[in-house]
Amino acid sequence: MAIAAPEPKAELQPPLIGERRVVIRDVCWEAYLQILDALPHSRSSRLPYDAGVLEITMPLEDHEFYRSLIEYFIRTLVELFGMRIKTMGSTTMNYPGLNKGAEPDNAYYIQNQPLAKGRNVDFAQDPPPDLVVEVDITHTDIQKNRFYANIGIPKFWRFNGKVWHIYQLQERVYVEVDASPTFPQVLKDWLYQFLEQAKEDEIDAVQSLRAQFQQFD
Image (cartoon, rainbow, N blue to C red):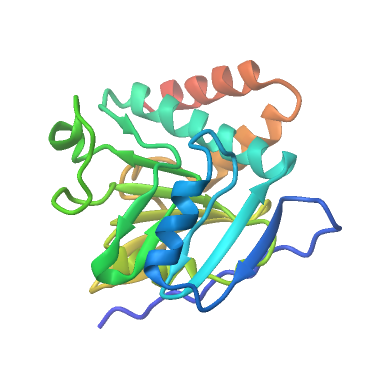
């Protein structure tokens, strides 16, 4: 029997680092949809909804720095491994049957890219994204591991500003693993080195990642 990995703890941060969060409880599904409809599509905030709990997350600079760089990291790996990708970004993924609405930092179809390419995804019929990424530097009231496991996301990456957690769905729960099943040859140190180098120069970080891959290959 697979044992579910515990929810990782957020790093303690000074105010205005990572994210601002507002939690509203006892929000019914219809009210959640009304709130979504009332907000502009171009908003930067995320509104995950989990069985009556609505958390409004407003990303700040550190959050967006890591989110964008992890996206860069993934897209570079996809290119180096000769894979295909459909990027969903923070697309709202509503599952009314589960009473859940997801707005991840980034989501991707990779293995299932052929099923999703060239059209809009219908979450009522199509499989969920193969990989979801969340940056949670501050505490979130939504238990993201349980949340995304219930939706059926096969691979889930979480980063809290210091630690990269890689989860794989096994028997309907997430088990923490040492390497992502999407890129099994990639060591965790690669991401840490990439993020650290990108603080000085993002182009140099990508070039170093390519060099690491060539040495490995």
